[in-house]
Image 1 (cartoon, rainbow, N blue to C red):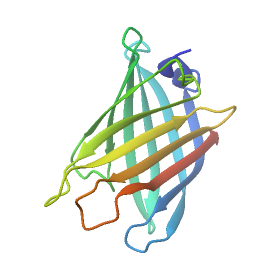
Image 2 (cartoon, rainbow, N blue to C red):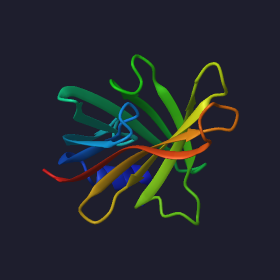
Image 3 (cartoon, one colour):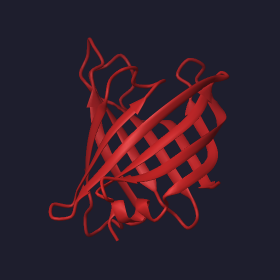
Image 4 (cartoon, rainbow, N blue to C red):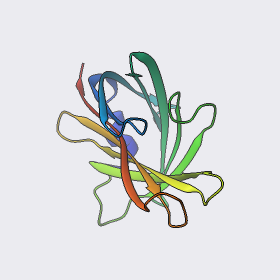
Length: 161
């Protein structure tokens, strides 16, 4: 089973908790979240649409996931009202023989962080037994005024609605 088949098998509505590692307070902020998993274009892609809130204000996002079975390449286009504003983050990943793309896969994108180098953003999706987990990790490179490394940014954990 490839990533698209795995996500398509989970089509429908989900509910759960969104945890934002709030960069303004340095503390996690939880909010209820809803997720809709929708196969599109005859099952070639899957769209994940979600809603959550930040300090009581509604937020929403969408991730369009694709997979090329010949190359093993996973692609994603992510938008989110709180994180991206009006920009789309394009991401790429690879399903490898060592990974089990049916249960866990990821993709990586980058975004400008002037005046320093671009930062990376990794999205990981786990399709476990009866649940879905979507993690976002901010990756800060060397050469910034911040400590370099991987920092959890947001995580949504869902079960069928």
